[in-house]
Image 1 (tube, rainbow, N blue to C red):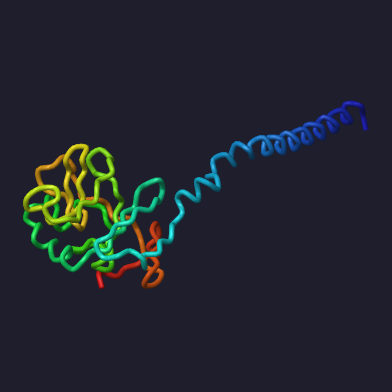
Image 2 (image 1 turned 90 degrees about the horizontal axis):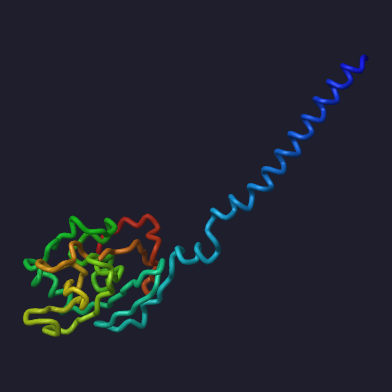
Length: 199
């Protein structure tokens, strides 16, 4: 074997070795960068579904929980509040919720799986304020049947989160995905591909 052939073989070996080591180095260098794209444990927890015990919510009462950094309103509606939903229909911008955001199983007059338990994202669809819960009849104005009132710009919603005509908010309050784990526990943020309507 001549010296030239020996140098060529050595050169090929060194080039191949350097390429392999360089490739391993590139992967090692890229790993922290690629790992930074995955959400942190805290970020995953913020987006994760939450379980809420509704057993202690009295009729007429609202609680607020946080999911994905948003207030979630859970309201135990009374029979009178449910009856009021038909009374106000003619004053609403989108009474059948055709333009608004809700899962198909909440596509009904109650905008909920079970008529008495309402679950909404509590953010005004105008500029993102948090509406006040005003369930008392007449507490906002004459003819008020109860619902949600945004004091920032005067947007009004009924007890199903449906927006009134003539206010700045363009859409009904959104209904997040949710499901019943059992009679007293709901999971917000995951509907388990639930396809049932109001019971």
